[in-house]
Length: 317
Image 1 (cartoon, rainbow, N blue to C red):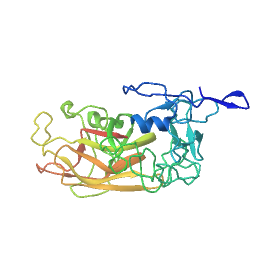
Image 2: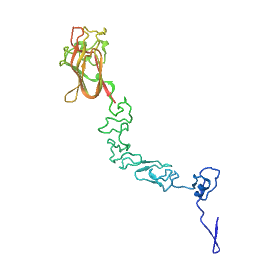
Image 3: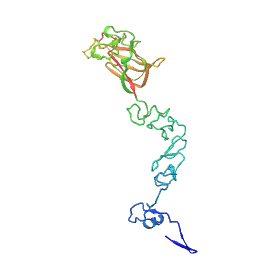
């Protein structure tokens, strides 16, 4: 204590701030001046006793305390900065407010419209980063899908295009029809009954060995989104259900109904055995047909095309 005699009276000056050594450096004594301490023993970690702004502890009167007093990180001088939100933890963690129309911190954009489908997703759960494939938000007009990754074969491709994956056989729930043909155990009911060629039941239509108006058709009561199909058409070397001539469905046009007319998806060309087909894009329809069905007559005895089983697979994303 320093005493100053003034007019015969002793005055007690207020004591200087008290600082304690923040780390054990061999000079762990009470300091009277943090600058003197840093200059005398080289220990810049000495801090004043009691709460202070920048100590990483949220104290009364502070909006935030992130462990420093540096502005521009959301918490400047223990005050929450404009465009940021800080939690009440110690130390505080601050994040930019995506969607407030201000580009702050690590944000690349913020147009303030709250829309996650434009070039700057800034709505609820938005990123405020320039839209890109894999950000989990479908950029309208540029992406068909976005599942939050760039992995293919999971329903949404690496370039954010919808992938159609093979699902269940929905032909079993369809109503079959045809242009005519088949009798008894070889009628229309054999077209999609779930029985393969080893049952020796099939359906045939009256048609020639050149394209005409013969057709096989399936119809659903509700729209189906289709991945592709597979047809069991027998093979002339199969003696289990061998037919004289080994007739198969050699040609035709795969068509689907768009609600107002038939749309040609692809052509069947020179098929002489069981075969499958995958649509280029998912097809949503209530009707599917093979039009202009015609056969290859391998034995010279008949020319009516036939199908042992028609399977149609739904599209599952």
